[in-house]
Image (cartoon, rainbow, N blue to C red; front, side):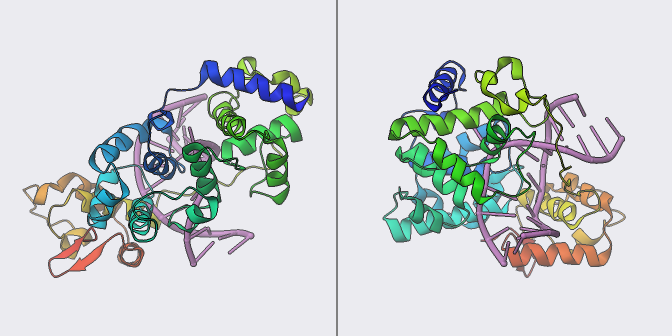
Length: 310
DNA sequence: TAGCCGTGGTC
DNA sequence: TGACCAAGGCT
């Protein structure tokens, strides 16, 4: 299928099928787009939606977030996961105020300088918030390209230069068309060309798919899953759940072991505290988790104990 | 660069 | 049920 036909087919499909997401609204600010892109890193849309709405209501511009303590960003991040993203978004807001007069910069290199903004997010914000022609490559786009053009079930474990070259070659010349193309391929990967059970029957470009033509060969490698149970990450997560709810510093002793006669909900953190104690981490593991949180800036040591960064 | 970093839904 | 997976970034 000629490239122009491919562009037209996906553009039409996108027009009919695209989800009505608030950060895609015409009046959404660049800040709103940036916040959405950071929140969406490794996190499904449905879980981002309510948190994004709350963030934009509370902090409609970078300066509004920048003048808050970083801990407020972490607290209102809730259970989105990877709370360092909240810290980086707060730092990005400060950098936008300090270096860009409070306005989100529109160029790829300037965006790339912001904390928490890597090659994907810089390209995505430049494209979706500023209408620039950028080579946007995320996990969805990589998977669609792998199937459509390479004929494999999954992309390589790590992004390759060849994939970037291919993505750049596929990009429509016209600026506005390139923005829609990026969004459409990403949407196709999210809704139809999914990792587990692709809905090829609904695919507007199945006739051009190299993977389908090859008989849907299985992946040639098995992705290594992320360990969770018993890991430091699990302990870190449990500690963060306590700190997010705590309204005052949490004594270390409280994190280390449950007082046998804790008959009250200490500072309203009884539930996450019980969850932490149920994990029953070894003392050295709890120590690793706590020192990791401290060195990451997700927690601070105060006379009264641990708390979110002020 | 490979390993690390949260969370919850899905099959 | 447990392993996989979700709009990555950082070191």
